[in-house]
Image (tube, rainbow, N blue to C red; front, side, top):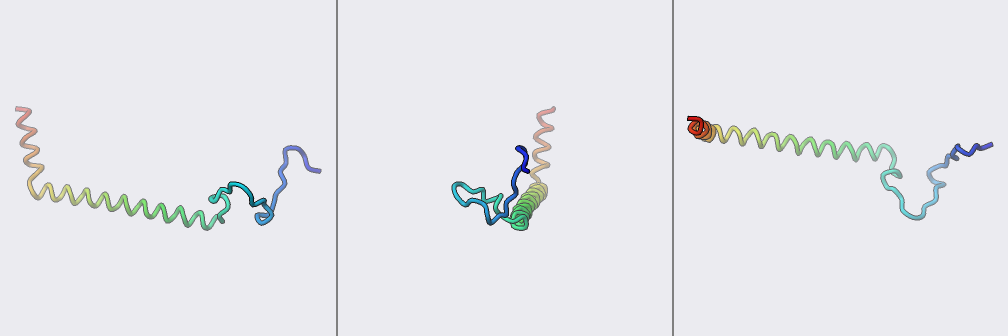
Length: 79
């Protein structure tokens, strides 16, 4: 006999299909993992691109002498 705290397990196809359905819960685990993997790869590529752009910006500023002028200006304030 079923106790009050127990739940009856249902096969996915026998669920009621009315009202609001949570699409994330209804997807198979493989689809959910593929979606999150794709989002993770996209996020990593964006972070990598931003880091590369920042490094290039620092290199360009150092080659053009921006940092030496900035350092001289800061040392002028100290004097």
